[in-house]
Length: 179
Image 1 (cartoon, rainbow, N blue to C red):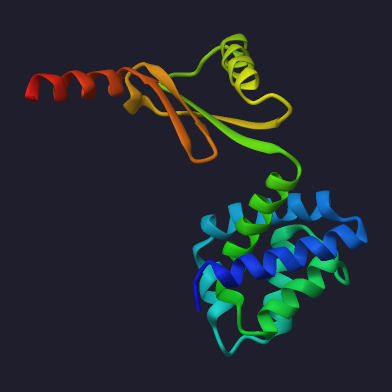
Image 2 (cartoon, one colour):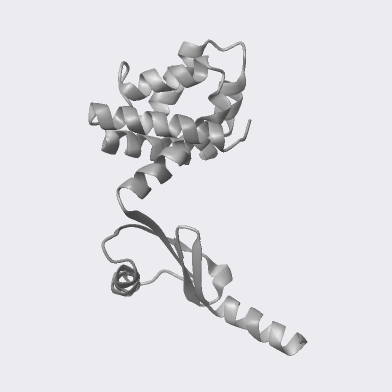
């Protein structure tokens, strides 16, 4: 089966359950936590794929990582995924759920990457420009420092990259000189 189809279907089912139980926001935050921690903890994937570890123990580990309560909708969902031998897809399911939630709630993920730490008022100015381009959307912003940019900044909105960095300008100049 398609690697993206399985996580997408499970994420849609979880979203439907979350809507019915009124837990959309809570599960959204928990799934964001799962997706972030899953990639940060190397041992987690090995634990989830180990056939000798009981499903209940795997479920407890994932529940603890998500910060969810035993017996919650997310607890039951995670156990279902693990018992259906889909544990390898848990991170992708979490990412699919997060994307689905953002889509349904008009949330744009915005990452501002700068060459050096910027004062908050400059970050706020960049965010204001982005807000004008995305009327009616809620922005979920984060900032990162990347010295490789040399100067300037990049703004990533979903899959779109706006590059106002010195590194990008130097690359453009280099290509012009080469052609």
